[in-house]
Length: 522
Image 1 (cartoon, one colour):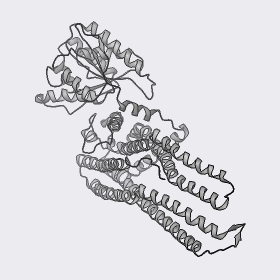
Image 2 (image 1 turned 60 degrees about the vertical axis):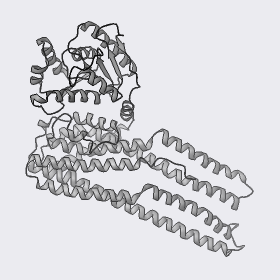
Image 3 (image 1 turned 180 degrees about the vertical axis):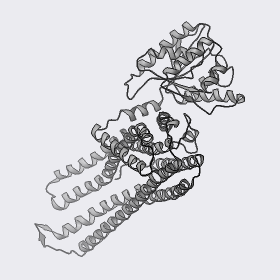
Image 4 (image 1 turned 90 degrees about the vertical axis):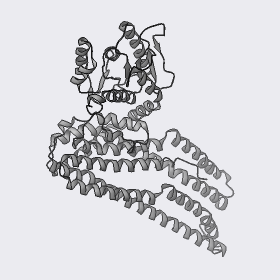
């Protein structure tokens, strides 16, 4: 719940009453589960409206407070608080905040307006809903309440307007619906996973990384802190990606193969059991199953959920290495940079929320010699091996499907030639003429050959393999640069570049797969 509002209020009691009403309406719309939905007030706790909203929100059970700041706390107190009481209350609220930090690096005095504007943007972009204590007047400066209200509307955030005075209604309901971002994040969090398999995968992930860190004499406390932070998010996203990919693959294959199976049934009935037309009911069943599977796959958005989960998993895979590199700032520009980008805004939101929960950079103290070897070998070289293996697997599968198509074609040709020359005549095998078998094979195999060819074309295996090869080349360059890094700043820049290469690869992959939705193939 983002907050914006005026600092000077003529009637704070009216504002408090309006804020309580807005909060009650929000709680009525969304129930907190403590796990998938947690109420968090995102506010810089400025004098006036910000502090009133924070006070009223914290009266609700399990409400958290996130405090993005335009300046370091002491400088913020000097520049932004006229009342000593408000300044002291700011410090009290800061002590109970769940998360604090500056949005951008502390600016020079001349750039203070830019810092306040940045905080306002952060509040809106980090929120599902915005509460604005707003009198409707034009903005009194850069980053003012009117500007943040305009930004919330532009971002389609539901906006609860609390009138600080006058004859206007105390609370005005949002004009727009709650954003899709909220629904998507909640769906991601509420998807169930087996607790036993989750624990096993988490332990395996942590064991592998601890083992790699031990090779390069990395402080185990530092590694453990990074793993305790990221492993629940990474393992969950990875398991969801595997789950949805398996379901997507099964349904996708079935849509190709069931049509061929339907052809097989009707041909078999006509040739071998002409006196039993009821067998065709099986063909009807297969044909009816096709739209059912199509509806199931699309209604559950298996493709979209697979792509989103896999994208997040790959982003989370890199996160502990970036954190151990000592990258600071509550919201580093490199992670929100549009040139790297996320395929969907809610994925960026999810990633930034997780990144903001990482261990403090000061706790990620690692000697540079061991760190650069660890990043080069455990992270970058590990990704090189992984992507090289994926490339080889895709090329091998493409070749195998090509051979299968050739075999089916050859068998069809042989059966057609034998049928043409009436090979088999009246000789029978188990009361079935061989010529009938040749006829059956000549009709059925092309149907399966077409299905295999369709699968081969749709999966674009050579193209995907080429993408992996290109990424391997870029990561090999990053590997060499990491090994040669002379100081922490150079190492951090290489780590950023390596992460950008992988982010672009993941984004492009998602872009390609968006066009691979379920279709009928008949």
